Length: 178
Image (cartoon, rainbow, N blue to C red):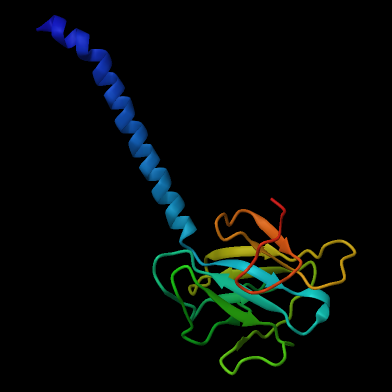
């Protein structure tokens, strides 16, 4: 009996290591999924004061999310500058578009912010509680560039920031900045 246990002991240890590794992988995946399920700023256009500033928010989760009560700001010192007053539903893997204060010729149901966007500012998305910053992106214009552009997070990897020289809400596909 002792001899049999001794011969399977390495296999038991290997099985134990495999189970612990699998558990760690599941825990890591769950933690990453929870973080990845937050709304984030997918794209921002603020070029050349063209009165068409806009912010696009992306919902990477499998459930629809209401924006009512969330905050947006262009001021790090005042992250609760604009509270979204409407029950705007962002579908799973969908987007919502909000326009800067000077934006013109907007659809009737457009959400207009109480601030405009400019180079060097940061756009901050904060949870309805006002305590959790969900996302922040610093607006940096490409050097000496005079046309329209947008900056935003890649939809598949929100850690990657991209610049698009043909800004179209919902279609960021530009130069990766990492």
